[in-house]
Length: 465
Image (cartoon, rainbow, N blue to C red):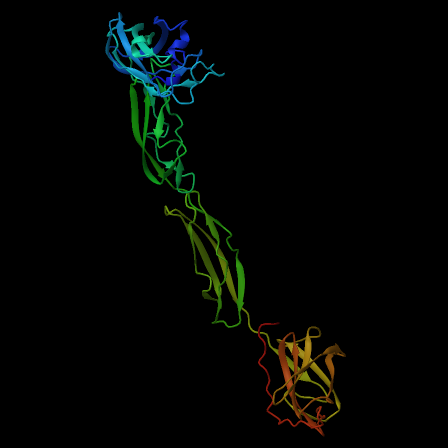
């Protein structure tokens, strides 16, 4: 047992002369009682006794001086014995210590550097209380700078008291998880150690000693087996310990979030395919911060007509997995076709209509989609030079049971043009327009000649009804 230097004031003067009336060599005795606590019968123990220097009066130690505290005698009448007692020292006194004849400041300074007296004793073999061991120390000091022959001696008596008990080891209660089934991971990477149920009792200690475990509570225990050691030591130095394994497992499946819903697609070729596209879901897991997610068929896969089931699976590091699915239905839809029946004066699909340049041609046309006559929708007339060039587009209006437009040929450049009708984006039909007469002048006064080309009817747009 070691005593703190600050806990034991073996003498109370900055120099021992501070406790004397005059430097006449008288012996002054200070008595101190110290309770050591319980010993086992016949136990041998070492006790460190330290000393503290406190400034009092006006006679002080010289800076740099060291006080030696030596043993005068040590005895006991309790049946035990002293085995060894060493001297103690206090010093060297610091240079900041009050000068000779100076009054100590308030609060009084103290100084405890030095070496303790090491007392080794053996307790009696019989149980009992307050067995007394006495050590008388002396210390020499020279407050007025006299030589050692005239130095003043002062004594301190230390009375040590101890109890002798039959010290039994403490009883350790291991945490609830000791010897139990595996624990489930509760955080990323494993399980946060919880030593609920850990405790200890002791017949001699009051209060009972406090046990501890290594690793400490709150430590992250990884997946798998983790060794744990718990121990407790009582006031008499007796101890108890226990070791066990905590197996951390992860059996919780990850959770999928953001799963796509069922959807429908169309194709216009009964033997064709379309591209399956979707956003992949994400997954969360208690123990795994980044579980893997895979879906089959993958986004970007071509699929044909029918119902395709897409299954997404999330898998964590412990191979726990969860799955969810959605369906993609692909339906064949025949392409839409449009047709045009031209009225007078054009009168006839795919015919060549001739007109004098500058004439306004009345265009009359009946438009159908998939054989059904349309009386409403987005109907247009597009005029394109046969040899290529900028096209002119105008709207068709419905009246009188047909679609109508007035085509002014005055500004048309070239003699050959393709005139095409469309309904809701579907090409319905076209005729070739041949213009006779002089062409309109360009800005420089020259005419433009365009070579007639065969009429080209664009392919129907199958994507719009």
